Length: 217
Ligand SMILES: [Zn+2]
Image (cartoon, rainbow, N blue to C red):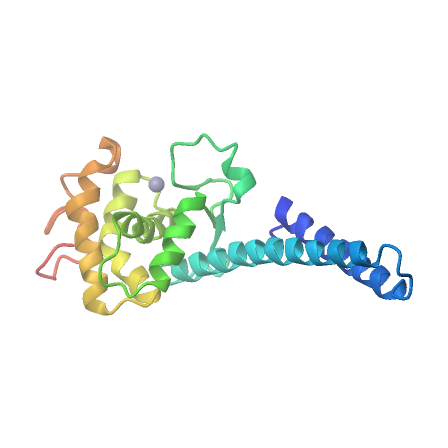
């Protein structure tokens, strides 16, 4: 169960709003302070609706990321954990995604990754931003860790060759998915840290997982 600060805030605000509304109705005949009670109830309802909206958005993005991972793993426990706003304020990590070896079913994603993934899923997929391309690719990369591939260059190269399946899962056509994959390999792969890059990540290289196909990746 994913409970964050906002979950608690949402529940408390909703409860306080209901209570205020109930009091406003109970004291309806009491003219003194009726307007204030109504105003107070309205303000609480608005705050509660906003808080619940943000909370639901978090869970929707997290579920979308989990579903995107399922195309690359048979592990039924594989799931995404999207960073919450409160967590992001204290996260100084340089990584956009991470899988801990002692909790290998769960891929942790920075807040902007899940947001970019969701914006890609909601888009027409014709001209994704590089941030969206990177987010789709990162799902594939972290899922390789969930699958037990821990050498970064190997996980990265496998992800390079499989990321189109993630894009398709998010609604891209096969052609759009292949284009996203090619964009990542041409524009973002070379910018990786050196231990994520391998000269064997090429057609016919040691990290080529589909040696029979003609075009890489
Ligand atoms: Zn990695």
